[in-house]
Image (cartoon, rainbow over all chains, first blue to last red; front, side, top):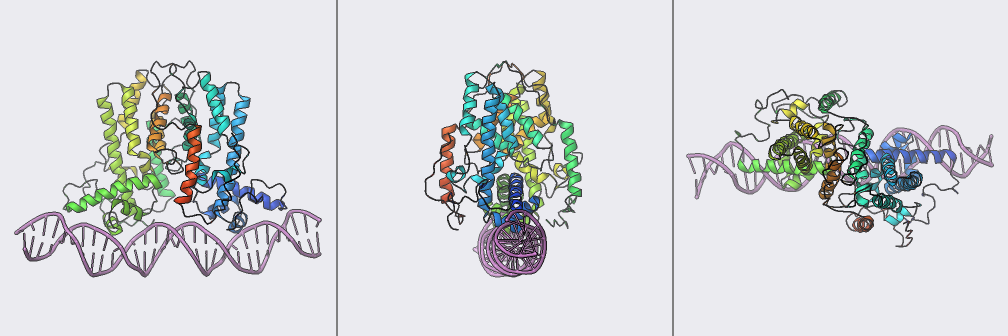
Length: 254
Length: 254
DNA sequence: GCTATGTGGAGAAATTTTCTCCACATAGCT
DNA sequence: AGCTATGTGGAGAAAATTTCTCCACATAGC
């Protein structure tokens, strides 16, 4: 309740001066890690129990460390944005070719699941509040890479910042159907590679990127559909609504 | 797929022989339309009130027509898959160029929000149950378009069925942050155009597609971030934890 | 050892969502 | 126009889910 924005050094990413016990700190990190996963999977309103469970701590521990959901959001956002900024700078610094730098960064950002933190960010905190805990917001290095790539004719001119970032955010979200189509992460990387190829200018000499990851052809697709049915039978016991063509006595407990 | 469509007349998309009153039928359609929207926005577990509200009917009417959530899922799935199949056949029939046919279909499928129905499908019904109500499952016409496009050298060889469909499914999902970045639909179409360009083979003579839709450059992005804050203050009254300090502390990282 | 700090989990409280009931409305027929 | 089978809305009880507190117990660190 009481204002505790930036005067409060405690809830920041890693309070170095904290008199926090070692095990407590470890737990805090576990919670943030779990929160990131769960928010990515289920969105920012995911039940907190789930997060505590995945972190291997009791619910009370979570509440002690992050009294309000918003603080958990903030913690995750800071962590991810920090990593994102670093990934961008690293890619730019270590890859000579700005096209490759951009590609490398985009794949790294995908792995960071940045999309998972955006919902937590948006509409809950002021940007300033988040950024207060983050060294840099990654915008500058990303845009620099893009401009360099365009200057060298590696990326078409009509592409802008949002075309890089917003697609990554999208690819970060789980596919409907709970990753049944493919290991999900792998699939997103494959799709990203196609997308990145789409950023090249007309007649670019650079060859298309060989596509890794799961190639789901019609056969695979049909097979998956069937596997889905199996899953439905086994995992969800939510079922007896089966094959009742008549609207009759089926009851769906769910 | 094997089960024929016509045996089960009652719960089908539009039972023609039904003794249903005209207004009831109209309401049923409103409900399905609303359900499609809401499922697309909020996922398959969205509250049913919301659907009833958007359909402009009472909750009782919804329950009367679709006693279980699963039946609503099925109804929506049938509707969308039917439209999808038709869109695929139309695109293939009306566009001479298989590349254009594919593009047209993909944009049409995006508008249908097919991703919104997949979660409803997966793990709740057997495929047969759904397909029993659908004239065709769209797989064949889509794959035919793809193969023709590849035969003419318009699409790279390593692209498969899933690369067409699963990306559309993804683009169908709402962007985190509730479409604050852009009208959302428009943005998805822009992203789809880039992706489609990425499907071209190396050195394709075909020019890149001019990008319509919202071009979010860094300036726009930052402006959006600010607008988001405003929204947060005005729309969400959820801010008990609003520790918004002063407006200060602008650490501009760029 | 001693104790400040940290922990888990039960369960009460709050919130959200489901689903029924019934008095009232009207489409469709004659 | 009048009749009635069919259809409707919404209140609110019931169920499910989620939040959040309390306190007896554990252990890191001195």
